[in-house]
Amino acid sequence: MSKWIALGPVSGGFHACAMDGAALVSSVTASDEKTALDGMENAPVFRIGDGPPDKLPASILPQAGVSHLGGLEQNKPADLMSAWVRLWIAGFLAQNDDWDGVVCAVHSDLTHWVHISAGEAVSVQSSLTLRLMASLGGAETAAQSALEDTIARPERLASHLCTAELSGDAEAITGHLIGAELAATRPYWLGQQVAVIAENPELYACSLREQSVPVKFASPENMIIPGLAALATALGFAD
Image 1 (cartoon, rainbow, N blue to C red):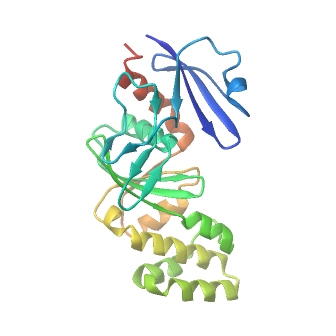
Image 2: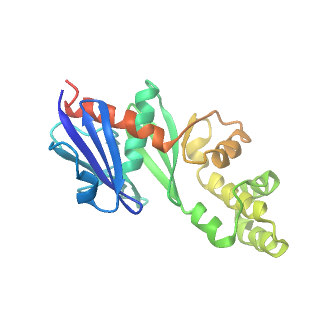
Image 3: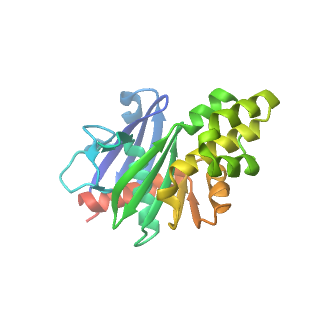
């Protein structure tokens, strides 16, 4: 087995994981790259988020011989997904053999709906819903009546939001925004099994269950180690 280090930028700094093949030895988050690597054994560094993104459709796991894991990019419609989200998905697939469906991954204030088939990301549709929620004062939970209203009549979103804002109904603001996102992404989740990967998955998981969609959910943090283990196997580090 090979000793190696996975290193990538995160909010506020860099995250480094010292690996022995597919096994985690230690991990640290620091304000800069040098500090993150300080004290780790001298080993090849595999960079998460370096280099140009791979064009969709693309395998979630890269080919052996590369020195970085790039993000995933879609030309039309234009979209871009972080390499960390790609790693989360690799971890989820490693724990769910032969899983095909849609991953709803929440990264910072972006939500990515990713169609997965045979270990490949086929397409992606992303949303700024969480950013809009923050700017409009939405709640962490959604009013289901508002969600249903906007799924049924998404063209009335702006009017619905105006009414909710005037009445000070934060849950309605969230419900209308999530409803508009679900209406826009209906081709992704309708008739599919969905995995929600998010620090707080209940917002999307509950909304999808109300539409009778089968949902699994996972924590991004818990997907990193199985993702790195799958990466080690793909790169030949775990032999």
